[in-house]
Length: 118
Image 1 (spheres, rainbow, N blue to C red):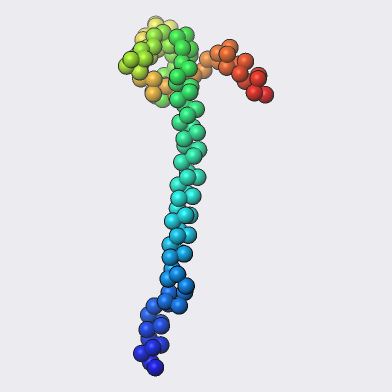
Image 2: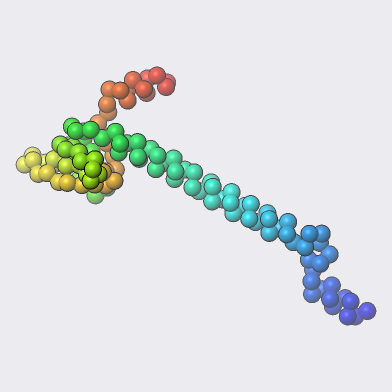
């Protein structure tokens, strides 16, 4: 009798139907949900950044991730670079398109699209 009580106390999941698989499945589903909730906003932000970088044209005023503000004077799609002109002394800097964080220039076709969406 005492041996039976000891075995039941050692394995509390033995009396639970499914042997705890339901709990493991719950945690797996919970982790997948958390991962999806964390990755979806990041993907949305990446799509927005890619669209902004693809729309950069010559003459646009841009800001790099290093904080340099300049005007695009050349775009090299083969090497994924742009040349920006900064300051009054017309210094030119060649940077990768991925290093551009913001495009300050608003294009006319984007204005029309914005008006149509509203």
